[in-house]
Image (cartoon, rainbow, N blue to C red; front, top):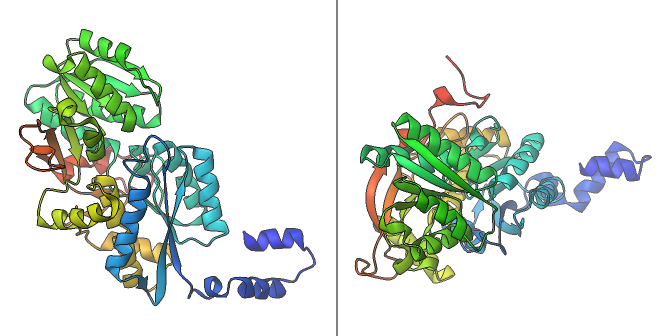
Length: 409
């Protein structure tokens, strides 16, 4: 890209002189001895900033620090950027990072619409992108790429195993309160397929614009339904506002609210009085074991909040990437991708996980119930385990995949 721009600006410049000029301008980058830079792209000022944003940038820095700060004799640097939940802005940042700044890989990319746009840019430039905050399962479906990995969760993981677990205990009738965007549609679609496969049914849907403050009409529609489960297919402040309104209207008296993407900061923001009884699915909980508690203590000291699966996923993905670069002995995309897929994933949130050919990380998920204030024993002690969702149930079967990279029998 830089060569193309220079030739357009200076058509008489020879390729030899051009190469020399670029090397003098960026000698370390050209020689492959300068810093390895990783970009954390997410919402740092909008509705999802509290659940991702700056804390995920810091989680990436923690991973670099724990790895030792360098790999292959090159310093590793973390750069964060705010895409403001706009696909065009996210695309612009990604192009600049890859084409101008020589960035090695992009991580996180919260918000599905931005992730889908960045996926194509990374594919075109043969660059690695690893998703933690993005949810749509399309990223490893029909839009899958040989240079991308869906690391932390997707809409299938949040819905399929959860739908089966709830259907098995008799909660087979659902009503959806769904964000009217790509993420909400993917959540509801994946949940509906799994629910119907388990013998359940959808009794209604209330679509709402993203960024709603007043959920009264949507909660009333859900309350008028005979559905046992009211599934919130949204995220961030939308989920919090829906839960608050549901509690105010007494929705929880006869129906069970389920947050399909409800994270620890959401529960913290709501408070246990409002959030108690809510069902949530996550791949990481800070109080699960000694290893997660040790990481959480360090994270809290830096961010004044306990981690949840998104920043924990950023931490794990950066660590795995650096291990792969070290094993491959290069930052070459194909070599690093091969190394990442060859190595098992063992970190603070994953035991013996793996990356499939479609780019999907396969790991266990967990269904939790939010505690009541009386049940909580310490700050941030919010979850009671309800069910473990096996890795094979949390990942869409390859036999159902629309990814062209998947070998069909």
